[in-house]
Image (cartoon, rainbow, N blue to C red):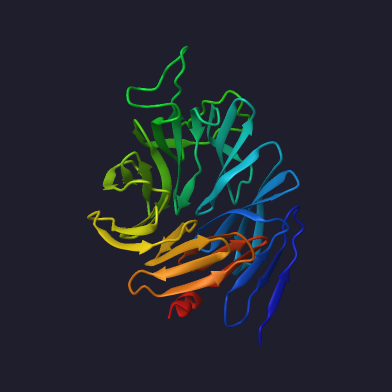
Length: 345
């Protein structure tokens, strides 16, 4: 017999119905607006939803049948990502007109009042900008970069660089103490604490975080760093649009395929054909997760076995030790790892 537990919460933009059968811990979260971004760490998921000029950050713990509203915002616009590192949530946002302020904000499950981890002013194609955060465990990081501008009055692109090229970039992480990169004069949020990880005279775009390590896109490929900034590996690969890091494997999305590298040697281990529009979502325990439109595909790297799940709308997916989170339209589902492995055969 299956037992359905319905938990009604008085929150502005979402409610939850968790299916918790005795033989399974699968669960479903129903929101009142489409899910715009999804992150997960362990048995928790963080998500962004938007509705009628407002947007909201939620944290869902399906095993505990708990849903928390972390932040509600109407004065800024949400960015493309939300991040979760243990009990810390972070998200990117922006506001402005001719001058655009980009910012990464953060809160914790115990303290919902957000702090600014970084804010910078620029335009839509030049100047300073703060990019989307990523997190895992105790490490939460993000990139601040500068796109140069060529003009008669103030040409600042170095030789060989052109309008809009990234000429400076620094990865920062949330820390117990230390100042954060706050170049914006219009940031009204209380500052948090940060530490510098690494810098480059070019791209250093954070793509993924795993087990105290960072995968970042450079001008020449993918760079693996420790959370303290120590160089672990450089992988020369062109036209990178995404990466996922897990254990001794690095998955990289390039045109037409997904490439799997060994994080110790940098050796290319496998090349998997990918369709146009197929996004690299995650990599965990030797299982590669991609999404395309409403479909999420799981592929076990050891034997190539695949399984597909279908969402109600544009799909986002994250795989953690406890299981798989899939968001689509106004629904987020959690499938425990035992069920994921059964699907893969």
